[in-house]
Image (cartoon, rainbow, N blue to C red; front, side):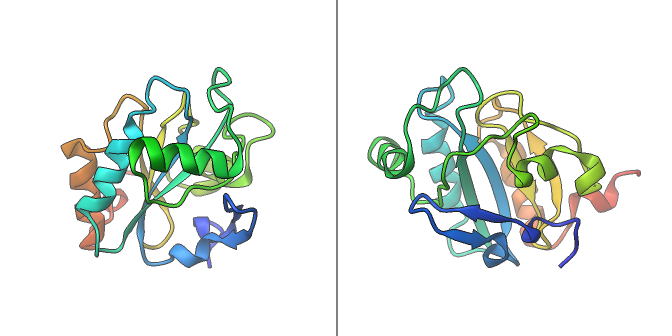
Length: 174
């Protein structure tokens, strides 16, 4: 495990259990901060559609509900999961509500947002549904703003490249 990957972090499931992100080792991940009361909330359906498009491949979406932006996540625990499943048909893992920006941000989100920590990108969430793309080695390799639809060809192409082992960062000047 490298200190430059996400596998060093533990997160809390909706059911309240601590798990290591190491269980996702070897998978391409799209990590998204979600909220049930946001104008971007319909992206939950698009996220599920994206997950299904890559079903059976080494890909997963991880949803981290947050109330950091405009108090748009009033729900807690199982109510978040129920809302997402009933209204948008989501089947990807959702975790307990966390802070995703500022001094009290969860350590995972501090890592995702800060190039000094992840050695790749700097992009703190500006709103709900900010998306981070993580390669099979657990390294952050790209991000997408909230207005980027999860089913866009831009996101799909980057996921496809990572699934076949082409790391986006290898071709970028440092």
